[in-house]
Image (cartoon, rainbow, N blue to C red; front, side, top):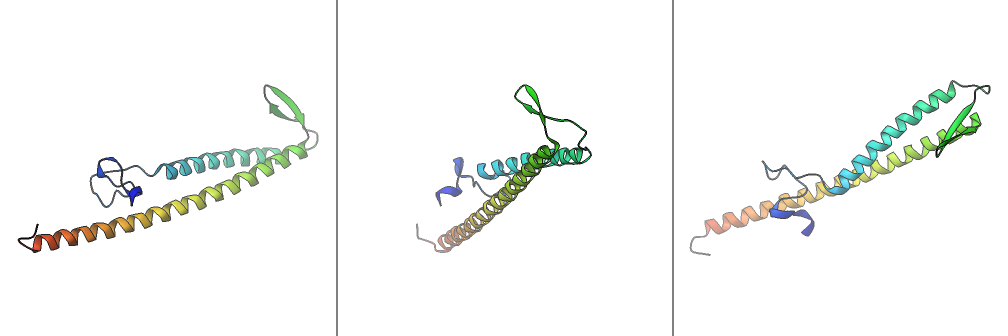
Length: 135
């Protein structure tokens, strides 16, 4: 149960159990959510690029940025590159979603364990209070 408690005896995974105290989400959860948001932005940008490339024909010239230089690129190659990038980003988003689901399940399991422990503690306290003369 070492992973459930932070400094000062606060619970790391639940703000429902201890009203009035707020604990931030675990670092892995924050990191995963932030990464997924960045990927969503990249997905949007790349979809816009794909739409723009779809408007072009063979007579148009396409350039890509390599360091400080613009280099001429074939339209078909540019479309293929953007398509592969979209596939990669989509796969990464799915990976992050899976990771987020796993973290949420772990958090829920730990929250349930904490509630059970609190109930056991309360029963023990009640039994102790109900048994006069025992210390």
